[in-house]
Image (cartoon, rainbow, N blue to C red; front, side, top):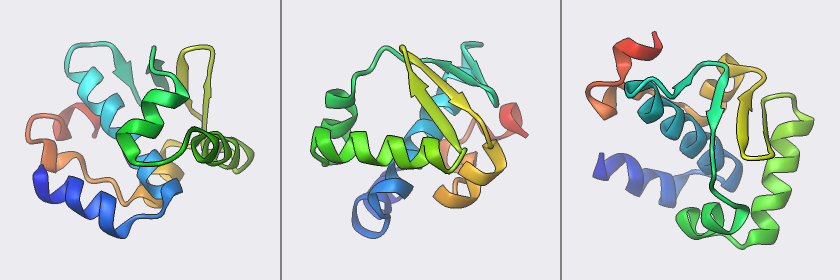
Amino acid sequence: MVVEHLVGLGRRSAMERMAHMLLELGARLALVGMGNKTGYDCPLTQYHLADALGLSAVHVNRVLRQLREEGLVTFQGGHVAFNDYPGLVALAEFDPTYLDQVGPLLD
């Protein structure tokens, strides 16, 4: 998991990092029955996302707008909606097997 996070910071664009983080949160929430391939409730603010991803809040806003405009994901009103789950997975090159227990839940 550490390697995956280091790759995320060093090699992914801001959009890829955001996509990966939203997918990872969804995968983790799926473990406890609080998320699935359609989305999940997310009380995090854009400031929280910015801190977690090493971005400015303004950049997070731009990235979320771009993801929404491309029809991949909507993050609004405390809810993450995956509009194109396979497309988001492809963008982030997300493979949930690094989370160990999550893979079978989202397959």
